[in-house]
Length: 375
Ligand code: NAD
Ligand code: TYD
Image (tube, rainbow, N blue to C red; front, side, top):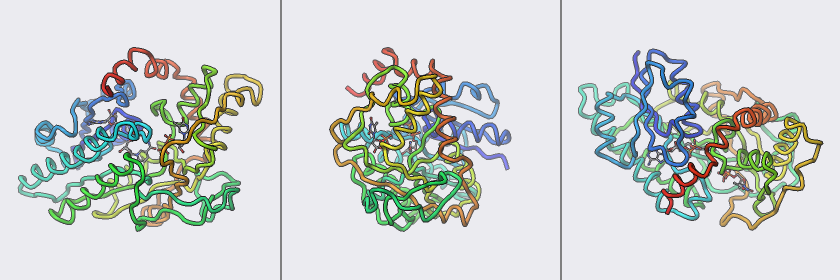
């Protein structure tokens, strides 16, 4: 069937991988990428597919309800994959209003625009889907009950041989929401709106909550690309607190594959957690990144360890995230494709091979543009 799919946030990190996958894999679909192009959105992320006949880019703000309503009806959209968001916790601590505006009001505006358009059609909601991409951060923080780690009770291809869990609890689809940061509070609110539109109006929707992603095209304000870039320039690596916080890491292309599978085969009104049972303490992951960058740059082992700089902790810093994705694995057969060490190697190579991309997004001109938006 010829689908007309609106992907929001497609010029950002995860969205660009999702757009690329859909445009290349489904030449029979029309893919409309809608993005406001904030500091995090960069059309250079999609240079390789921008001329494909099944791809259209539209610059728009999801919170601009009239504009979104026009676009959904003009392109006769029958499926929405919603990724557009403000996504960086540190920015949300400084400027929570922007997060509420985009993540909450923007999602609501998309939901209402889709509702009005789909309800105006003779077939109404049949064959339609509003797929909302969310984060594991809405579940709050888990305790670090095993600071030295215990053998992980679950494994997938994403886990390394000596993989560790740092606690006995994991986030399940049924875990009660308990967000702590303005970012996670705004994402939690948007998730609730999506479910409310299903329960109230019958909007066919799915929500997925994924763990921390890493890979090419991630804006270098997030841990892994920031540290790769700083090592390259011999700049300090700011480790928050003691570096003991734990995150569960997934290669971005595996997230995009999960989104493809769930978009096509997921059950309406369901929630799926996405993650690879791949927990790492920040300080351990930082050492893997340093070792990989040093090796690929031809530096002696341990060359950049001296750049590690412990700094004041992030306010309200969540201690541990660990996602249980067995539902997605057992019901839809998804598995990560890469082990963590392979994913990190691919990622570091990409940033070192694409230094122009890094230099561009960290250049004065680019910074001025996005800092201007945050005045
Ligand atoms: P990102 O910050 O790299 O990209 C966000 C994109 O949204 C950018 O292209 C930006 O221009 C666009 N955008 C922002 N405000 C907009 C607005 N008002 N209107 C239209 N477009 C707007 O984010 P990401 O890391 O790719 O995350 C994408 C989605 O996945 C987000 O919803 C995020 O909450 C979720 N998520 C991210 C992670 C992660 O580790 N990065 C993990 C789980 C879930
Ligand atoms: P980040 O990449 O911002 O993702 P999130 O906050 O969504 O998990 O941060 C990952 C972890 O790394 C988090 O525990 C905070 C920590 N961190 C640092 O220690 N230093 C940094 O400069 C950054 C950006 C993050």
